[in-house]
Length: 466
Image (cartoon, rainbow, N blue to C red; front, top):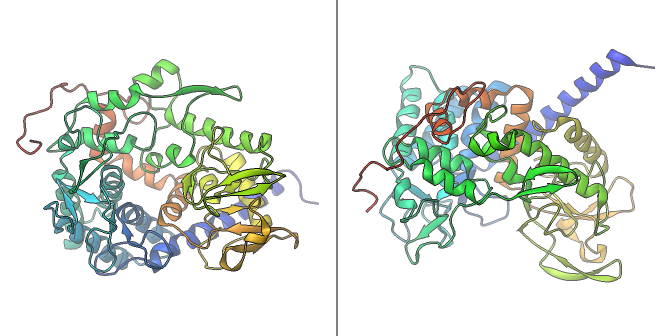
């Protein structure tokens, strides 16, 4: 019998093997779905899908991990990084309906073959920010004196400097969510706790068209604080909101004014919300099949269908792709393994247990990318067939599973596992000047960052935002 330290060491070794496998499989998405000449990355494995600019941002941060883990040669990663940076640096910025971007921002989705706007989508402020985060990370990693490495840094800075954040404020403080050439600015702004912290950090530190702290204050002014299961939390239902900015921002021990008043920080809040998701699954108020202490994770994800079906004798609303959340929904029995995995740095003691449970219960997708993007054990079995059908290890239970894999799931798996194991992304981004300056201008202080930086509330004059 193995006990004590030997048992603990054995479990740690087993966990390393398990995490190695998950990371490597998640990275295969970028291996297989990145255009070698443009660096554009497909949004998902679903046939006919366009490229996603946020997916490119995740890929650019995954390449350094892949190099260090031995999955990718340095010169191959550098070549793909340069391909993406050259594409975006030289892209059409006229704002044309069939262009690539405007005012330094880029359309959310681009056609995989031509690189031009797809689906009449919006010029996306948040997806541009996620793209920029990957670019700035690449500039930190490729720090050598070679011509290619210098070009990475120069082009990343050029792309970042062009973004006109003041224009995106559209006459207000909070940044707009998007713009289209047909309709102009979307009515919604980035207000309240959501994935936009990284957006505001980059906007505050911008070298040309920075916003003032009033923009960040507008975002925080709409925060929703709640007490849930005995925990005081800054609420947002889907887990991705508590993860995306944290991929690049090491926020443990840092406080802005809002968090200083609450005597907590955003890292701790993400930890608390991770536990809320687990508690919700344990309580399982709607009696969905499979929910328990080691089976949870509610976020923006694929689902079985937008339909009402019978479940336990009553009509149950199911959804296809929607931002699921806990504990206030929407919820239809759909679990997203990646949502739990991306919380690994916040709450490893419960996330590792979940990963082990899912390995045994549902296993990995046969496509070779790790776990299915999402699954649902409550969707009526007679409606689950073909590529959507998966039999559990008990041999009797049939689950609906998503037949597709998504870049915005795979990237966080690679990067948050790495932050848990080595803190590599966090440590590299600690040295990124725009990240440090943006956090300081947002009022953050503490531990590795130092003191907050005071800047004028009046934005410098510029012709560009007119």
